[in-house]
Image (cartoon, rainbow, N blue to C red; front, side, top):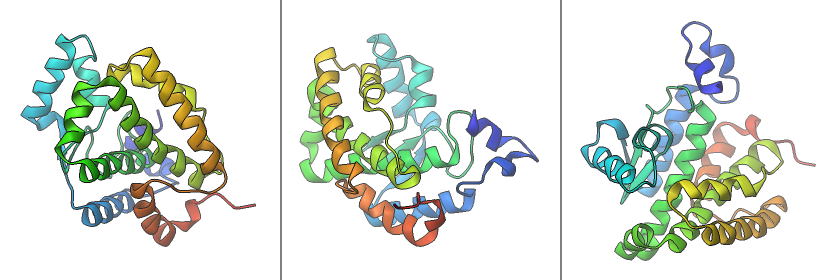
Length: 213
């Protein structure tokens, strides 16, 4: 809803009080420069459209849901279901910041493990859940930075069912995120992508950070 309101002609800027479109664009430039990535429009990518068809045929995820509701990273390319800095339904400006960091953590995973990362992600549901739990740690860290609170981790873990993960994978992810949230609540930032993000956020939009103490 917030993304839809931000996208409305004329009145949209009234709902853009947390971060501005130009700031989102500049943030992406920072992340892309630091982690040597690029972005592409997901709907325009033949590779992504074929992946969407395959996921639907396998009964894992609806084609349109994959193309419109999920960002996907392959190698050093982030395939996005929105134009950076342009809000739309389901993708308000802050959500675009958060998904940028989440997807760049997948780039970090790729850098750490090489081609074995992509292979494990595609072929092992337990590995996929582990990688996503690590990337969703970025979401927790950014939420704490922005609001000073943490969201419930169980719904995040349950969302991995849409990634084709098994119930036992979801349980492991929920446990991992619960343990991680303890550290985040005490101010720890364990994700490399979040550390890169906070360099820019603390410097350019410090007013968005939750008041400490």
